[in-house]
Length: 235
Image 1 (cartoon, rainbow, N blue to C red):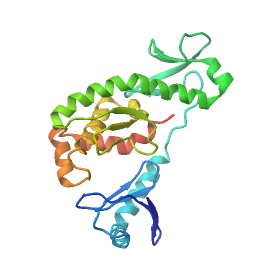
Image 2 (spheres, rainbow, N blue to C red):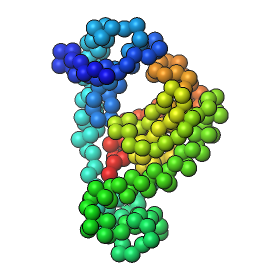
Image 3 (cartoon, one colour):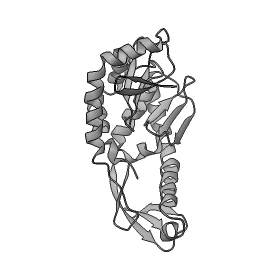
């Protein structure tokens, strides 16, 4: 990965691929990443980025507007947390056989997690919950949609992917950000289908989106939901 600058645009140049077009993405953290075809030199990529500068400016402005409303949650009883698109109130409890449980319509968190180890520990407890509870659900949905897409997925993992919702490797392994488990099931399905279709096409070409459309004809609505409300899915 190279850090490059064209006029006032700073971007990360990713390794080239066998794609036919240059893929420019405003990531969830506002960083611009560019993945070009293998045949392009860095100087040619600079020229492409420069030619797309108005698109980049417009999408960066949208990203700033969306993230201006990012929610910062507090670790107190009554705070709201998402799981599979539903809101659940947090309740701090004195006794419980697990650090965190979802029961009776509430997230029940052991009070001592906060009092003894602080907010970072509570964050880790929630992250572990999403990973453990979400993996079987994602595995099931991947199996279902893999058959429809016509691919075979490799290993499936849930981890912290930073600014990406999900990723796939060349050998078919799929990685999902634990924050995906905060989204509604329909949005989770879109993320899964998106990655599975990348096993056919590594880029975001028309052919790729046509593949997504075959499985999810309303994918544009789900893509827009994630763009507009993805910032809400955080701790």
